[in-house]
Amino acid sequence: MYNYEYEVDVLLFLRLAKYLHSQDPAALEEILAMYVDFDLPSLCELCESIVWEICANVFFDQDEEYEAAICTFSHPLMDRFCALSGEWSFTSGQSDDAWRRKLGDIAEYYLMGTSYSVGNIECYPRRDSAKLRTWLSSDCYDPAEFGNSLVDMLLHIQRENERLESLLKEAGTRKEAA
Image (tube, rainbow, N blue to C red; front, side):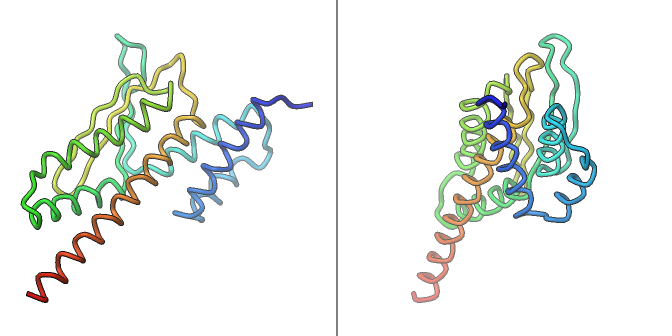
């Protein structure tokens, strides 16, 4: 009836849908309403709709030389990471450039290390925000695979944010005690 690849695609879709539902249930309902007559070929489109709903301020461009779509986007978790890491750098006396590079390393690890969809990535962190620019390969781009790598990256950044918040709270408590 169905093959293993179909099952993997459905599981990846369900994970994307679960993540979006945890962030914005109304957005997921709107997307699912557009795909009332669902069939397997529309699974790719459905995954892509969910991926770009997860990200904010998505901008697409074309790279003719490498035959790739350039996608620039941001996410509130990345912005929060920049703000927290800047605050922690000030509190601890560490260089904030290292923290900014860390965001790029996280993005590179998840989006290029586990996904064949991304050919290149650039990270543009600022004090309170960050943007990622990815080159999505026209030959290998799979929205479900890319989306799940993106979710993995965002969950990692969320844990880093929680860790930084804890460090900042602890540092504030020590300051008050002194």
